[in-house]
Length: 148
Image (tube, rainbow, N blue to C red):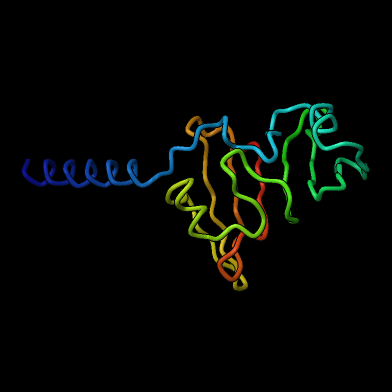
């Protein structure tokens, strides 16, 4: 009986700890330049101007790259940027300091390190979307938002 109670207490503490460590990012703030996964291609064209299309990829002159849903080619599945000039709704852009990302969005839900780069992933509170920041030498070099 004492063993079951101890096990239950430990599991409860671990679950509470993992709950409080996640970043609570609203789905509404997962966007680049005001365009989010789930937006229409037309809204992106209205915001960013003319685009070039190659297969299911759309490229804008400001460096924004969009992939649309394969089953609904009018809806954005993924949006990313690797060049300065466009920011998230909370002001993070290419070149922003790593510390600013954490200050604005909190501790990431997931951290991956590869080839000298660090990737911070933030999941929306409803887990429908995610936002990734790729960091190199202390600065943001890529921002990507997508449906999970």
